[in-house]
Image 1 (cartoon, rainbow, N blue to C red):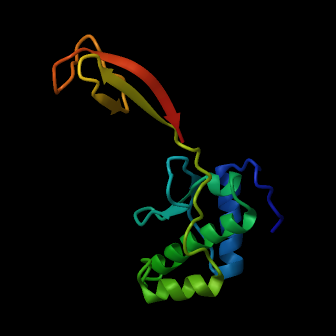
Image 2 (cartoon, rainbow, N blue to C red):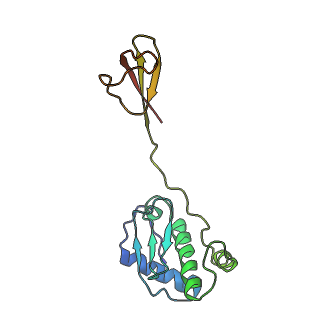
Length: 163
C-alpha cells in the first residue's frame, strides 16, 4: 500500500480499491461492495450501511488527517461489514466487534475535524428613558420594539463579535 498525502484527491473508485486492499490484508476476506466519500458526514469518520452493504467515508479523514487515521476509520467500518455479513455482533457494544477492532488495529473513535471557530455576534441596546441595557444575538427593529420596563425608545449601542 503506497503512502497517501493528507491533501491528496481520491475518487470513489480509488477509495473502493484501497478498502479492498485493506480488507484482504487485515481481514483476509474480500470487500465486494462499493465505497463512497460522503461530505454530509460531519461528526463521524465513516458509516456502514446494513441494507446494501456499502461504506461511506468522511472526506475530511483524507484531507485533514494522516493516512493512519484514514486506514483506522476504514478498518472500523470493515469490522462492521465483515461481522454483519458473518451474522455476528456488528454493533459497537458487541464483544465480537470490540475484539475484531482491537485485533486489526482499527480506530475506536474518529478524530474530531478541524472545525472553524464559530464567531458570535452580540447586539447591545439601551433604553433612552430608564437606561435598561439589552443584549441580543440578532438585531432588532428599534422603530418597532420598546423597553419592557418603561416602554421607552431603544437605541442601538454596539455590535460585539466574539469567538
